[in-house]
Amino acid sequence: MIVTMLGKAREGVAPLMKVVRLKGMCILEQLHLEERLLRTSSDNWCLVNDGTTSPAIVMGMSGKLSELVEAKSVLRDHIPIIRRFTGGGTVIVDNGTIFVTLICNKDAVPNVQPFPRPIMSWSGLLYGKVFEGLADFHLRENDYAFGDRKFGGNAQSITKNRWIHHTSFLWDYECKNMSYLKLPAKAPKYRLTRDHTDFICRMKEHMPRSEFIERTIKAVGDEFSVSPVSLESINIDSVSEYVHTTKLLTEHEIQEASILQT
Image 1 (spheres, rainbow, N blue to C red):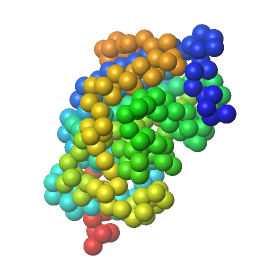
Image 2 (image 1 turned 120 degrees about the vertical axis):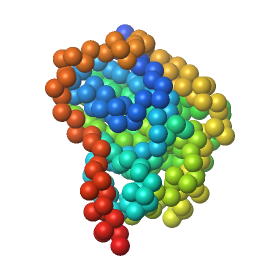
Image 3 (image 1 turned 135 degrees about the horizontal axis):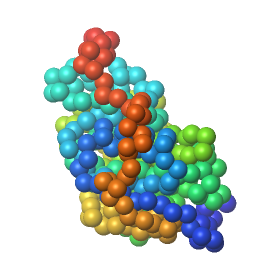
């Protein structure tokens, strides 16, 4: 059944997908935008953010800071930590990270039930088209990988009528930044206790940055009727009072985590 998930939208009128291309948006601002669009909009959205302004650690909504981050190093080097509104693991992002977010109404993708595994399977097929003929692409548990090395981390949130699937793609990364992350207690089986630099890989070794973005938008266009829109055209006046659950952690919260690690 999975092999028929893609392309089904074309049997009738393809649902509209608004595509917003961003360049270097602060990851906190991006997550605020995503959360707002998920909760207050009735449109389907694809956000592509090519890099973010400066390094930041992003945690899932239920992650325990003391178990996931080297708090002393983060305090010393003034690395911001954000707790996002979706689940998933912990990542460090910077200008070498490309972000792709899909926000859909539950009936926008035929034959895909609004649950984590079906959405993940569908997205794996979508990105399989992006990387077709270029690399040994696999959906490995909840990660995107070339062979047995991860290059894309995913997170999701599902509401009554809508869902979001967003990915941080490691087009490039700084090895020293990976030292801020602890080896998580719960890791995918295929990781096999490998440290971060042995477990992940760089997308730039497989394809140009611009080509990845163009291929992704094309793959989305195969499933939806794509409508490019600018960030400025998004009407945010009506939701100016929206309270985000995504937040920047305070220095005090990070200090408390560092005490637990002593």
